[in-house]
Image (tube, rainbow, N blue to C red):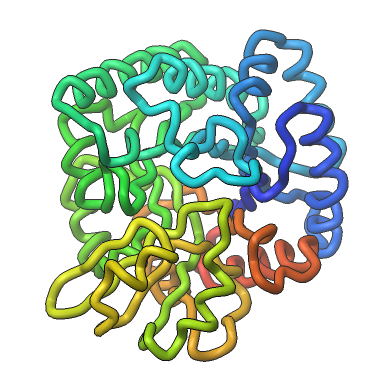
Length: 359
């Protein structure tokens, strides 16, 4: 099942979430002509806490989802809250996995997902941040994070018959910057039955990692791909010729890490405005700006849907696929959101679903 992530909608209480689902998810399902639509729910920490503590509230919320033909297979527990604040930037990485609030939030999400999980789901997944922003980080922090993951695994084991799996999502600039970093940290440190990888294909593309080599490394590890966030980065072959076009994407809400491949190395800048002074400008750039899957921007800009297609073609098993274009509100020319989400899901079904596998 392919879902779309509801972190695109600015709602941080249950009533607001239901209203956004009514306004957007239901019309998307109807436009696609589907009996069921997968939604990857984002629940802020206060919402998750309230639902986790109230079985009747979970039952009522499940009824609201069922009434609209919406199915839940996965939660996005990366943003803790305030994901649509005027300025988010580095705040999205807090609290870190060293802070007790992060484990508590994730355990609340486990409780909620156990009751919302679609009847036909083989498992439920919860994606989470790659420990923290890269600094400060110490060996003691490593130990603290591993202990926190053990707490979450104990909570998962107590949920019942159908497994829930935590999916760690590497992101440029974080402690687990790349898939290789995530494999190195997870392997031997967590229980692979319950903790695996969330492979965000925008992040993978930004890192300039080779998709085939990445999938090979995953296959040779003891870490599973639990969830794929189907996403595309902004690609610029010649940044010097695209300065004006890129300026429209240098918006103040989210962090847009930039990587340049030149001189046989990957050069790094933590945000798009800084890239002009911190990068050589001699090779192609990839920008952490989640772009709509179904449409290419005007030249000289492009997207990395080729990376997404390569990953989908080589993935073992049937991990959850979640279309995660949370940036609609900050796109230079967003257009109709219902139409955009529906078009992305149609693109994903046409390009990412293997033959014989239900979308």
